[in-house]
Image 1 (cartoon, one colour):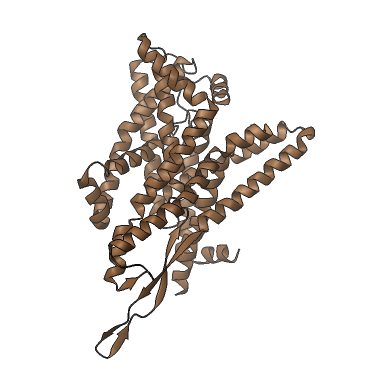
Image 2: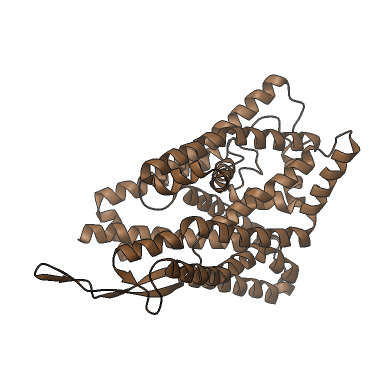
Length: 419
């Protein structure tokens, strides 16, 4: 409470916070503006019966389930970022731009991700509208109606991307993460209300068990998010003129969950494609294509295979994102240039090999934890039978992780004012 009061006592920080709240309110406002020609009752039934699209809708704050102009949320932008990150492994020029050209290179790289958002939003919007049209959720649309609907959907995604960039500029958290958090939190009241309406006194212990599991997940998320492996580093003494430098000991922090919530968001974005492809080509007259489409549709609707695929993708993306953000070779070179060394390890390639070995072991714990959190809703719903409260482990992970990041950013801003 003291820190919150300090924020509102500082005019600069207060203006930043109020501006961010205003942008979040704008994002929730456009999430409630629907596109025309929608059968609301059939739309609710579709999302109630399709758990996968229901989960995707929870990350857009329900804007997908209401077919608002921001129905795709930040999905196209996140997918574009994934594609650009993967392309760095194929094209050395992109890797050079992202890793070695400094801030200017990263800005150009991010600009390519933004440009890629537009065609991806058009493709995803068209595919989803075709799916809903085949389910008779939206009526017959003319060519002009299709063009206007897709244009509005693309504009909504680009507008949300712009809001995220504006929020990030205020240095009080990542804008994309904050918008996703706002979408998840916006669904809390409806989930709680639905749970209260369907409350059964005979299942009191089941509900208590559900609450205990939720609290345990929150504690686990905080613990893993803050956990780090400290690698000791010693610096040799150096004499320059009449002064002596170095001779100190410090440590290199290696976080257990170095990737945050990014792997789960990446995995969800990637899992969205097979289901959309399956539903898009389900009515094809070509037997081979319709058979492949049916396979993809059944694969996504099968909870066991869906959960296993989700777990595997989260673990894979955790290692991938950690490899992109934490480069043992460049870190070992920087330590060597500064006259530092890890006790018992030779500087140079041996240090890089040691850091790489340690990174793989530490990341394994974080990757398995993230994978378990991702499939936690299916496990808990299977054990307790509670399906009304849709806030799963993934949602809790995002909310808690983003809240921790915001706290750190606010602490940094307040410390700067104190100095």
